[in-house]
Image 1 (cartoon, helix red, strand yellow):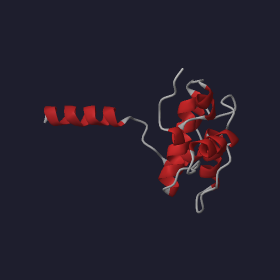
Image 2: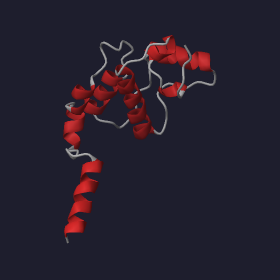
Image 3: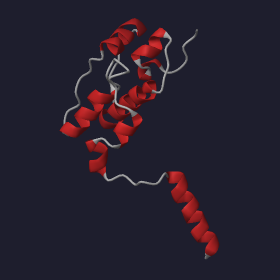
Image 4: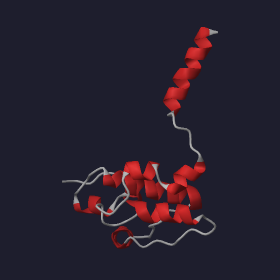
Length: 120
């Protein structure tokens, strides 16, 4: 089996050829970390060292982020996929709730806007 993808975003289990929906939550955690810090949580000059860091699950905590945000990062970047946060739990996480995100998807907003334009 070959592995495809950007190594810095790969969950530890992907490195051993396993893939499930839990991998996406790991990648979400990596993306959130990058958005918040401008850096990837697991970085190294050599692939071997980077994979070692990913497998360890150890990363530097970003400065100036809330405790709720830190908790979300910890929950999404757990090495054991069975302990990792689920998509449903991520949507209900206290950090996301605190952000007051819209309940509708961008696609549904676009459709509503287009329909309103056509009706006018």
